[in-house]
Image (cartoon, rainbow, N blue to C red; front, side):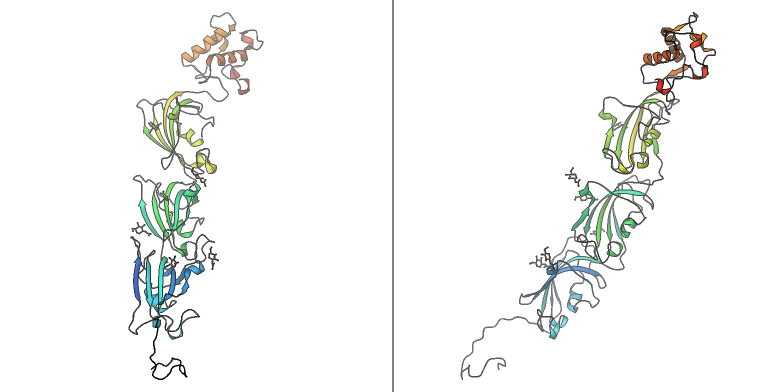
Length: 458
Ligand SMILES: *[C@@H]1O[C@H](CO)[C@@H](O)[C@H](O)[C@H]1NC(C)=O
Ligand SMILES: *[C@@H]1O[C@H](CO)[C@@H](O)[C@H](O)[C@H]1NC(C)=O
Ligand SMILES: *[C@@H]1O[C@H](CO)[C@@H](O)[C@H](O)[C@H]1NC(C)=O
Ligand SMILES: *[C@@H]1O[C@H](CO)[C@@H](O)[C@H](O)[C@H]1NC(C)=O
Ligand SMILES: *[C@@H]1O[C@H](CO)[C@@H](O)[C@H](O)[C@H]1NC(C)=O
Ligand SMILES: *[C@@H]1O[C@H](CO)[C@@H](O)[C@H](O)[C@H]1NC(C)=O
């Protein structure tokens, strides 16, 4: 009756035997793999199929509750192809149809596990195995990039192409939602050229055809990302990467300054050009709408003389050819703005958006000049200048003469500078012997004469 019971004098005849039994395992040849889902994420875009590559965590126990193995003891997921005989039969079956983030208990009878021989020291022969698993990642070697467009701005006149330089923010996570990197942490966009191999293959591909302001989710299988090796402790081998990106701006190094006239007054004869003194109002923003600077911060509009490198090149161009009252929207790529280094408050390689309005325009004179004739000027000059004909021209007379030319539209003084002091300087240049009056002999030859005065003299 009891093949294993100790005998040999220990058990007396006619003894009643009392057994204390602990059932360790039980199975039946008709048993199947039992699957019980413990939890499942709300959204599940794909479920595992045979030939997928999966990464999962597990705790393995015997039916008795005795643990025999766990992925956590190796600090790493268990990574394998599914449904190709790499796993014990019961697991190849039990792991099918799972979502990333799903937890399951899979109970495998011994004939679908390690059978009569057991496995190592921990799995005895004929043992039923209980696996509690958590699927961390799945992809198929045939997978291509998956792109979900999440938000496209209403106006999108242009989309990214190879050779463009893009600035974008991103959150990088694994499929189970664990974050591995984010540009926001660094308070700075990620910047790169597109289609030139500077970023992982999948991202390089996914960055094409984007609009400014667009948001996308990009799911990149490992063969288009960091492959079987991953990256140090940050990205495990064979990991699928999920990037949520937000495009801030992009430009091509060949881009010109883009000018859109939003309002042009009916009367528009006089337009701004180099040397003119102008007053303008502006708003300067990034392409995502972040306002950087505005003339509204100050009591009065900004003032500049065009052609003197006092504003960035793109703004100089944007402010040229405008008439008073005209409004413009100007897009300035970084090579016409603050370039790769940026400036105070302006990020590196940022495209800038300006709203401009010309408020005032005073025609100017070339650099180094204080006064120019708008026609040929009187010839001979001295008699014209000597208004009362007394053969000498003191400062007052000289000043009256110059102001008369300005009034009659025959000459122009440098705008934005004190008129009296310019005229005084001009007078002193001509009054060679410094006796307070100009006589005919003192007047320089017409070509160099009072209209001109070199920069260092003034
Ligand atoms: C799942 O699919 C939806 C719609 O297709 C998409 O918006 C979402 O980003 C996807 N999620 C993941 C993790 O792939
Ligand atoms: C797993 O990580 C823990 C804590 O970081 C460490 O103590 C342990 O040695 C690691 N185990 C293995 C097998 O790497
Ligand atoms: C495995 O066991 C550990 C420790 O009890 C637990 O934290 C972990 O969630 C378990 N993993 C699975 C996949 O059940
Ligand atoms: C990013 O900006 C925040 C808030 O201004 C600051 O607390 C944080 O230290 C910055 N991080 C880096 C990496 O500069
Ligand atoms: C990245 O995550 C932060 C914090 O959750 C969020 O505010 C931001 O919108 C996310 N960015 C993208 C591009 O999804
Ligand atoms: C700048 O923005 C303010 C607020 O939107 C607006 O009132 C103003 O007209 C803008 N300035 C220019 C020059 O467009």
